[in-house]
Amino acid sequence: MDNLNKLMKGWFSEVCALWPGVALSLEIEQLLYSKKSKFQQIDLYQTKSHGKMLALDGIIQLTEFDEFAYQEMLAHVPLFAHPDPRNILVIGGGDGGILREINRHGCVEHIDFCEIDEDVILVSKEFLPGLACGFDDPRVHVYIGDGNEFVKTKTAAYDVVIVDSSDPIGPGEILFQKAFYEGLKKTLKPNGIIATQGESFFLHKACVANLAGITRDLFPVQAYALVMVPTYPGGHIGLCMGSLGPDPATPARRITPAMQDQLQYYTPDIHQAAFVLPHFAAKLVKAG
Ligand code: SPD
Image 1 (tube, rainbow, N blue to C red):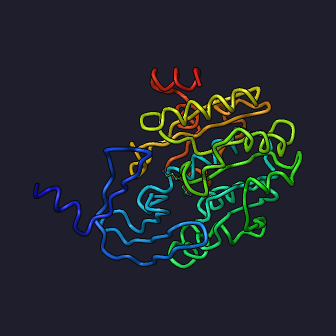
Image 2 (cartoon, protein in one colour):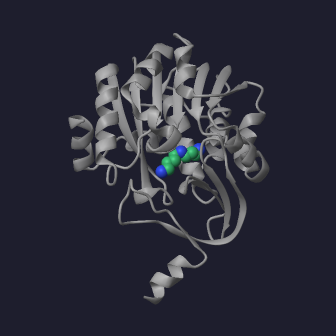
């Protein structure tokens, strides 16, 4: 009972119907920012052990402790799988972390970035400069609006499309539906690749099966990868990928030693290994 009370006092607990009966808790030093934006509740905390933490509608989007794992893998896996990625679209991810990673690729010429909630960008620029630096690159072109509507305006425009969404409740819900993926496919150039955050195969079986089924129906090549992120539900998250040609699981370009030195999680080996799934997860992805 003492432990129970400790959890309630001075701790943030990520309670959500998407992972019933379980919640990660982090001890909080200070609430630095709290605002109900037009779309969602935005909270920025200073935690005791994990640096700053961004939560949207009470769900952890990132902590400074482990954000690199997610951002590096969601950006570098599709970008290195593509032989010549020049034009990129990013939907969501207003913190700027995915942009920070894409900007490391010298071959990239143009990045369109569409985020529905401008307040997420503003809070990141104020409190998370290590992520918001992603907006500083002149190749980045920011559009504030609905990603689902944005993709309808583009045809055969991108080599890689990355969807850094929140979970399938609230503003992110539409980004998990087949019509959205049909739109994404239309935005791709020949050989294009899409990568979206693919939730947890322990906790969100129906969601993973649904995403895998959609991408398999729409793309000649479909793949699903695993990333360890201790502060996400279940301690991990998936990447769901669809490709018009290149194998998402195989790096098509070499990483330079200088770039490798800047990274903490991604390596060419972890790129390939991430697609080796536990047996039950592989079955789930195939059956979806
Ligand atoms: N369960 C939370 C999943 C959040 C994925 N998006 C995070 C945004 C970080 N750039």
